[in-house]
Every structure is written in structure tokens, then in C-alpha cells.
Image 1 (cartoon, rainbow, N blue to C red):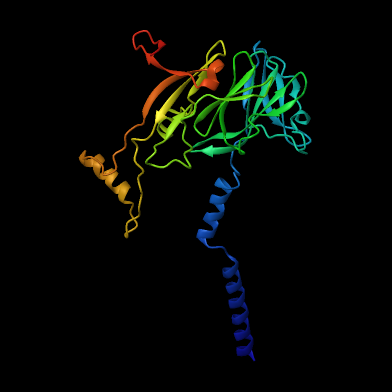
Image 2 (cartoon, helix red, strand yellow; image 1 turned 90 degrees about the vertical axis):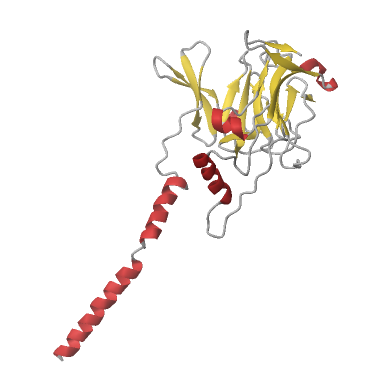
Length: 312
């Protein structure tokens, strides 16, 4: 009898230990869960601040905050007292036919303070969210208008008000456009930009108003155009990436990457890599807004001594 009870006790203890061991997660599962919390759930991400903008008189700043009823709103904080005032309520950012306000990824005021440019529905290009949709809010009338309604979602880049506040310039598929806000008319200033998704290696890729990956990675420069002070011209970079070959990165049978291994060997031995890269040819041009329909543009010459640009 005693032997039977002892055997039963051993069996019960073994069963409990087996169940406990089966329920205990493995080390790899635990590590995966911790990694997911960091990169997927963003559990340790610092609270978002901004984008913040100082107001012209320097006594207060504006910032984007979550609205109580959902969506985003722009509020003002007095620098001295900390008093909060809502500048643009979320209710003013609901497009016609929509039920929810726009999410604000970034924004800019026109110089005359009459209009607000909102950047939303953004997509990442390399490292930064620089492609998306733009909307203009007329602060006086409350009219909310989407920039370039004919464009596919999340295809506009680097939109900016002209200094006089009457136009918005932007980049779309490597070409520069201007929309006249009073009439809604859109002018395409450049015609030779290549749609990177559709361009073939033989035809080459022409980039207007934005940079290729080299400048974005090495110098933090992605946007590459600017209004003239009188709102009549746009100066921009044009990059010809045709000299840059397409490099196929293949994995070797042993799991190593041939291109990476070749690159490291070249660093050590100072030999020429088997996939040489050439930086695209860069030119600076100016487009005349008034003659956009005629496609008039001119190349600019840079004087290194004076730092000035003059038409060629």
C-alpha cells in the first residue's frame, strides 16, 4: 500500500512539473516579445512633441495636439504664462464628404497669415516621410481645399506657399508643379522628370526639385527647390541619374552577400569595386512662373567667388 501511494505521488509531482515546463515560454519567444514591444508596439517611444512653430511676434508658439473628440488640432501656448489657445480646431479640418478630421503630420503658415498648409497621409521615402497629401485651409472663409485633386494619394512632395501666399509649389513624380490658389489652375513647370517606378534604365532617370538617395543619406537634404522672393520664379536642382547603374545584390550559397564582401575587400585593399557608382550629374535651373505654359526655363551659373547665381 505504501509503495502504491509513493508511486502515485511521484506520478503527480512529475505531471505538475511537466505542465509547468510546457507552459513556460522559451527564451527565443520571450526575446521576440520584447523586440515586438520596442519596434512594433513602440512601448518605449518618447511622447511626441510638435511639430512646433514660433509665431511671428515671438511671444507664443503653435503646436499640434490630439483633439478631445479625435483628430488633431493646432494650439498656441503663450511663452510667458503657458496659457493655451486653440488656433485651428479639428472640426475645421474635416474635408467635404468626410466624417473625420485630417491627421496633421506637418503644417506651415503662409507669410500673410491667411492660409494654412497641411501635410497628411504621409509615406516614407528612404528614411523620412516626405510623400503625402497637402491641403490648404483658408483661415478667413474656412474653406479646406486639397492640393492637386487629380494626383494619386500620397504622391506630392515638398509643397510650399509662395512668398505672396497666392500659390503652392510642389513636386510630383520628379516634376515641379504650381497651383494658383485663387483659381485652382495648375501649371506643370518641368516636363522631363521621370517617374522612377516606370522609367527604364536605358531611358535614364531625371529628377527635378528633389534629391536622389545620396544627398538624403549623406547630407540630410531631400527637398531641392525654392521660391524667389517675388514669387515669380522657382529655382531647383535637376539631377540626371542615368550614369548610375542598377546593381543586383545577390546572396552567395554560403549565405554571404557578394556585393558586401567585394565592398569590404576594396576598403581593405583599395581596389576598385566590381559595382562602381557614379553620382548623378547635378544642374541648377530656374523656372519662370508666368511662362510655365511655354516651358521656359534657364540654367544657372554659380560664381564661387561671389556666391551668386546668374542665367547662362
